[in-house]
Amino acid sequence: MTGPLRVVVEADGGARGNPGPAGYGAVVRDANSAEVLAERSEALGVATNNVAEYSGLLAGLSAAAELGAAEVEVRMDSKLVVEQMSGRWQIKHPGLRPLAAQAAALMRRFDLVTFAWVPRERNKHADALANKAMDEAAGITLGARGGTATRGGASGARGASGMRGGEAAGKGRPAEPAAGSAGVKPSWEPPVATPTRLVLVRHGATALTAQRRYSGRGDVPLSEAGLAQAKAAAARVKALAPTAAAVVSSPLVRCTRTAEVIAATLGGGVKVEVEPDLVECDFGEWEGKTFTEVRAEWPDEMDAWLGSTEEAPPGGESFRAVATRVRRVVATLHKTYPESTLVVVSHVSPLKILLRDALAAGDAFLHRLYLDPAGLSIVDMWADGGVAVRMVNETAHLT
Image (cartoon, rainbow, N blue to C red):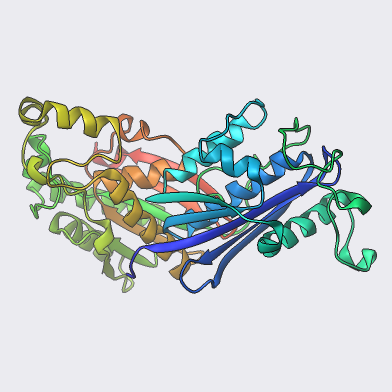
């Protein structure tokens, strides 16, 4: 694995008329080399400038998350979006608040997000993508126009007023990408493309599991009951994913042993690949202690940890840090095994975070979801950024 990925997101959006045929564009660049890592653009139908601009931001952040970025600098020539997302301007129009909330949820997936206003001439790539999307929204091709499109009709103005400033009410249907969806519109229609499927397996039980103790980096083995659970999970995995390409595991023995049982059951030369970033959260000084013991000795630290994913146990690791490395794994697996099925064997914290992201849920999800030892979940991911959660914590094979 390489070090944390730092990217620049260039985003833009506009409408020909306000509202009018609208579209957005977004570009993700490597912060060091300026290499283009991803492009996103889409026609939105009829919408306002502001809705289109926010949609460009959402698409750029989603693409950055899909790439596993840790730090993001957002550059836009929309003063409105930059100031609102930086917290300096209020979001007065109710039509923009849901879009800003989606952006805020995406921002929590990164270690750091900053915003910078740039003049339009320094945002040409995203601007060109947005113009192309507006052409599509208006039913116009560049070939028919004979030249590069301009915004706002012949005058090139952003909207009816020719200004970028105020919040205009959106009458179109904005893109509503979920976390990690890279701007994909919601739809009930079943996808026809082949996804990359992750069959998620929590390792079998250990002695600490039975005692309800914090079990992080301590390398405790499976108990006899845990080994039986691993065998039952392996049989269920074979039924669900008989053609899995690989079994990817945390390096700790309770996971590698579970993974070995699964790989042997699958047969066909399936190998276990150890992925260090799938390791459990480091619980620091709480390792091996019960919840009651921790509450008695570290009541304030416990409250802080339960209240924020940025807080870490004394000497340990925050869930925010766990999320950063889990996203790196997901991005790498998606890229390395396109349209394949993989079995991922890990621990409670990494698997909860992966499912939280897939469901575009908030941080409270982490404390409300229970994952049993050897429980199974399934997440599908498509090349266009679409995500579907097929199953969460199935345990029928353990009864």
